[in-house]
Length: 146
Picture 1 (spheres, one colour):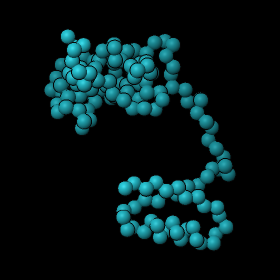
Picture 2 (tube, one colour):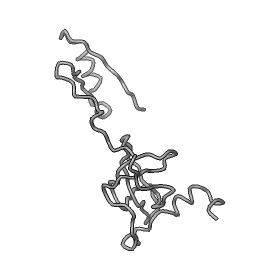
Picture 3 (tube, helix red, strand yellow):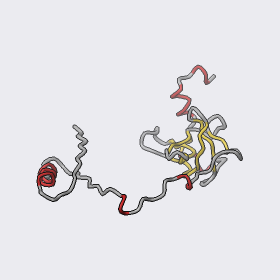
Picture 4 (cartoon, one colour):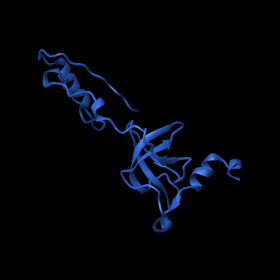
């Protein structure tokens, strides 16, 4: 039956009614390690139950919000094995040992981010910094939205 429905309809129809969340028994709890079907099975940790966001249909929630080991924060639209399953014994756990060690202070590069409303004086400040004699090397990276 569902193979003839548009994919969007399948996803939304699998979501949980907020009014029914007290009646729904979820398979996982916060902190459980799971694998999520993101095209490939990806390991993560449940961070929230009955997750909602403004883009969901009114009165609907997703069973889980998951922090994947690669850092992405996603939600599971259904509590079904085809979407989310318990992480197997060979599934990776977050390895904090693989992170780069913190650099010593003398190797760190200080940065300043300048933000502000239109007309707030950002350009004036940057021009002053660039034109002032201070014997420092200055690099400006501009990201103009408009």
